[in-house]
Each structure stands twice: as C-alpha cells, then as structure tokens.
Length: 361
Image (cartoon, rainbow, N blue to C red; front, top):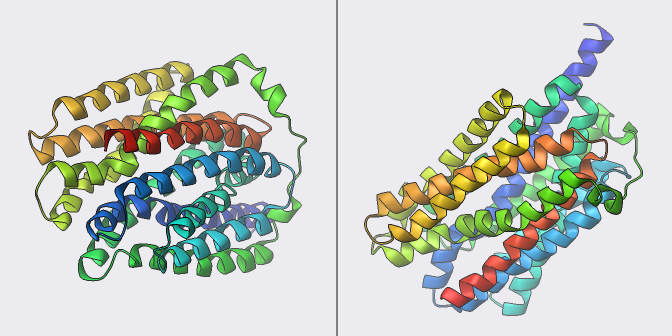
C-alpha cells in the first residue's frame, strides 16, 4: 500500500468516526422530542416547562455556534470535539436523574452549548481531508448522521420507554456519548491527522458583507423556526390530537426521520442537476411551507394523514438545511465559521418555537 493509499484510508476512518460522533450527538439531542409526551403524561412536569427547555437548548446552541464555529477554524479539533461529546453526554445523564425545574433548563441549555462544538469543526475536517470533487458528497453523507440519530431515538427510545421510564431516554444517550468521547480522543491520537490541520483567520463581518451569505441568513431564521418546531413538537402534536397508545403513535411517527433521509437525498439529486443551488434551496423551502400549512388543514382527520404531512414537511426543511449548512460552507475557506454563522440563525429561529408552543398551549 502506497503512502497516498494509507493516507486516504486514514481519512475514511476519520470520516466514519465523525459520522458516528454526530449520530450519537443527535441521539442525545432529539431524545427530548421522543420523551416529551411521556414527560407531560407523568404529571411531574408542567407543560410550559417543556417549552422553556426546548427554547433554552435552541438559543444557547445558537450562541454557541457563533463562538464555536469561529473557534473551529482556529484551534486543535480533536480535544475540542472530545469535550463537546463528553459534556453533552454528562448533561444528558444528569438530566435523566433530576426533576428540579431550574436544573432541567440549565442542563439542557448546557447540552446545547457543548453540542454546538461539533458541526462546524466536522465540516472543517471534511474540507481539509477530502478533495474538492468529493466534499459535497461527504458533507451530505455526514448530514445523514442526523437522520440516523433520529431513527435511533424514535425506534430505540420509544420502545425503551414503553417498558421503563422516560428518564432512560436521557440516561442511555448520555452514557453512549461519554463512552464514545474517549474512543474519539484515543483514536484521533493514533490517526494523528486532526491536530495538524491548517488554521484560518475568521471574520463574521466579512462573511455578512457577502450578498449570498446575507440572503441565506434571512432564510435561516424561518427555516429554523419551522424545521425544529415540526421535529420537536411533532410527537406531542400527534399524542394530543389522537387518542391512541403512545407506542402505536411512535410506530407511525417513525416515518418522519425516514422521509428526512429522503429529503436529503432528493436535495442532493436536484442540486446535482440544477447548478443554481440557491434556486434549489428556495424551492425546497417553499414546498416545505406548503406542507406545513397542510398539517393544520388536515388536523384530526386521521393519524396516518397527519404523519404524512409532518413527515413531508420535515423532509423538505431537512433537505434545505443539508444544502445550507453543509454544501455551501464546504465551498468556502472559512468552513467552520460560515457553518457556525448559518447555524446560529437557524437555531435563533428555532428558539422562537418554544414561545409559540407556550402560546398555542
């Protein structure tokens, strides 16, 4: 095996490690969505508290993206990602053992802060280890880790909670994240690639002066609001509108992350054939908005129809996000900074969903 082939093999190993890390990170994030109905039905938590928990995560995650996205272009990433995974896992673990309101909000906000240390740095790793011709596919494949994290949560945790307690929806992801953080650290020391990556000077002001970036920022706020609103409160919406057992509802809701996968694949297919990526982004977002309206127009008719509407809406928004936060940043030298900037505005919009939830409840 030549030196080039050995290096390519190391790059593939590193990519797989990044993929698994982000899949587990999502497992330790969307578990709240799966647990919300059981948390409310337990009688321990006031419904308004659940909205505050989601809002705390989104806004702290958004602020963290600004800080950590910029840091991700300037510092050594193996240790940076290790701490993000480790503390996120610890927050999940502690969340599963408490019912104190202040601690729940603080722990989930802290989870958001440390989870924000991951996506931008992963995009930087891809941009520095893959040739330009392969970056787009690598970035979109990496985005599929989010979908698999959802599948893990929807399939694994809903069945786990059926025989135990909602608390295990946080304890299990917490333990997995903490264990994997050490695997990540020691494996990176062996590969010895990440710590040698070139660093870049960053400027958010310079990025915002670019017209295309500014227009994307304007799109990111409503994109975050509708995407995360549908994903976070979708299971609770189904439970409140249909008098069916929780496990039966979740078995149908599994269609949501499956169609999210389709949304990312469709976004890739269309963007490969239509060179104007901004046209593709705008079209997917528009179809997603139409699907969002359909959720409420068809409310209460049948659970299958509601799940289809929610799933199709989520798939469109997920496809849009995959292009905004992976494909576009990977074309830019300041990969982590641009990814962090766009994610900041997506999750700023997502933070508004908690207040909307409080209003409609």
